[in-house]
Structures are given as C-alpha cells and as structure tokens.
Length: 132
Image 1: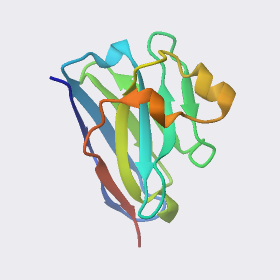
Image 2: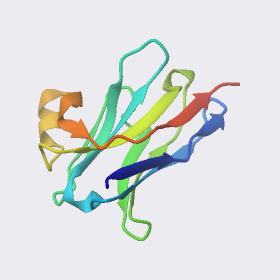
Image 3: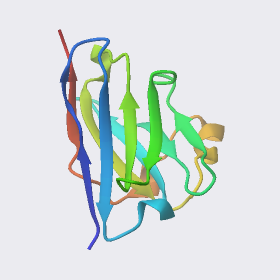
C-alpha cells in the first residue's frame, strides 16, 4: 500500500527557514521524479519544485528560485525541501507527490511549470505559516 508523509512544517517569521521532508512507503522515492506543491487558502495547488530520478534534474517555480532547494537525502530515504528567506506569500499547505509519467524534471524546466495531473501518491500535507 502506497503511503506518503510530509513533515517539517510550522510557524516561522519572515526571513526564517524551514526544512520539509517527504517520506514514502509502498514504493521507492528513487524510482520517481518527486514534486513539492503548495496550496494556499482559496488558491489552486501550484508546483513549487521537482527533482528528477537518476539525472539530478531540478525545477523551481520563479517565486521560490534562489530561496528553496530540493534534494534527495539517501540516509533518511526522503526528498527534502529546504526553504530559506521565507515570505508571508509562502504560507500554504505543502504536499509532495510522485510523478508517474516522467522521471526527469527537464520537462518542467522546458514548460516553465509542473503538471498536476502527472502526479499521484499524495500525502496529507504539512502546514507552513510565515508570519510575524
């Protein structure tokens, strides 16, 4: 049975940092490109970053480029999202998911975005709140 769990969210002041982790059971994270998405109240779910499987390719949304870093943490068997210089606009529930259609992030790079319908195995999300 497939199970995905996101962790690491919390309340942080503007300019602060958080590190989110995505863990999975029932499948190997290494076998898929893994994406991080977020959804703020009243807004659609948007792709934030994704990490390819095997090629090390990455994609970042313009809104987080230079502030967020996605990585595979083999010792923990997780895909992490390091978030620095957080802003109030980063407040959202953050989700991770596996891309069942592509193993690389290069398509997201080319298209300038992540396609929600390509992803499955969603977790319950972790709340990130950036506020003073």
